[in-house]
Length: 87
Image (tube, rainbow, N blue to C red; front, side):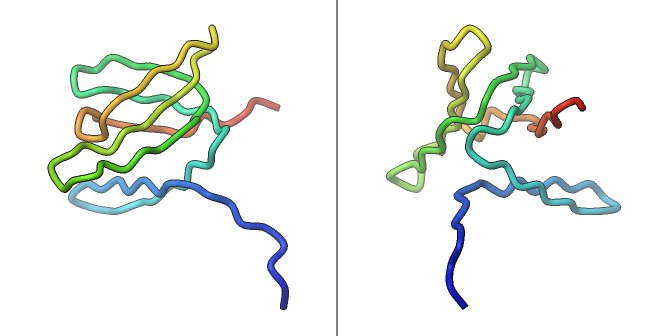
């Protein structure tokens, strides 16, 4: 067997008292991030940066519709969803 593709992505696990689900977000996917204060930001997943030390926050970077860049530490994310393309 030969490798035909390798897709870098992040896995987001969500859980409540009844279930656990995992979603995979690939670079370039449209996502909606809701921060811990309820503010929603939408854009294209651009970069994931791991913290260098244990106490450092991992960072998610997205490109907004106006092409500006937005970043947020994962500890400040209340929810994250992949936005499916409309047919």
